[in-house]
Length: 397
Ligand SMILES: *Cc1c(COP(=O)(O)O)cnc(C)c1O
Image (cartoon, rainbow, N blue to C red; front, side, top):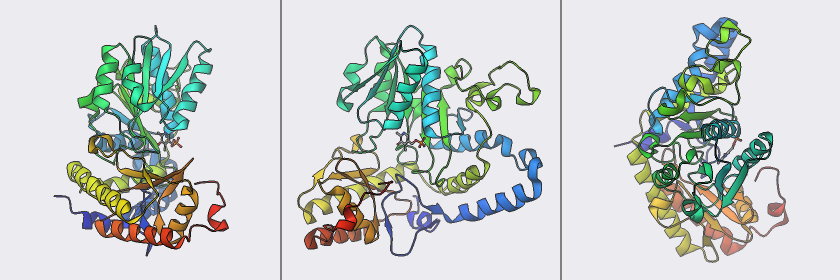
């Protein structure tokens, strides 16, 4: 059994704060501070350029990728780190489209994160406008997969509602219709068990600063199924994805397998933080994590619905259709969230009316949930959210 009291002790959590936003930016693992300091002082400071070999910086994207692979049901050698998620979406999509050259439609859904849709639109423009991004309601994805679809670009868990797609079902349907799949695991990796191999996913991408706790600006990852890894053409053909970067050939030749999805210089210091963050996962059984996450979510929903009137649950009640977040709608959601944050209960707000709370058993327990709901109920009873200061929109919501 996973000892969640032990994992909680591995995080630095500010005194008095109930942090329900690990789905957006994970908290700092205590060991990350020391690990980054060591990378700065002992590696960068002392080794300088020799750190690429001596400290293993050059192999870090693949080494760390293998540790992520374990958490998402991927085989060793199928995941590599680098860039940001938006870039990885573009990269996966471009390769997938090229592998299905007779078709012109990218299928996504209206619940997808805008950056994924923007990247897809941008790629369509770059490809000369013969390609088209088609978005349907999340419930309509299955029926919209027809023989015009080249690639599905689906984020498994909706960033606003927390609604979860069935990855295995959608992938099977896509394959049946001759389409390839790109899965965005932004709200899946580290949130619950993911089985890319079992689902037969073609490509997957995700970020590490959410449930994997790599810190602000932490790098993204990309997965390519072993069957495609030596066929997929990298659209972002940078030198570190080359077969022999230090041959400095004038012509590009893609590297072996997943290595070709590297682009340029890896973010060494961010990867050091991520390596420390991943140590926490050595103590976690994903099944235990899922069970604990659902317990926390169910408790939260039950308490909110008993203690606070006037809210509408935006997240599906069915466990199978949920990730690791719970969202409620309220017309004054923004101000209410600011009032909650002022009292140490940190969630976030997503336009137009969503109050969003992430539940991460690694550092959140039942006590936190009960206290958070009590604080929220008091804010609603006293109307303390109804202040001009709480209605002033900040740049990041
Ligand atoms: C968080 C998130 C992103 C963010 O992309 P970055 O390039 O890392 O800023 C993209 N897509 C989805 C689905 C996300 O949830």
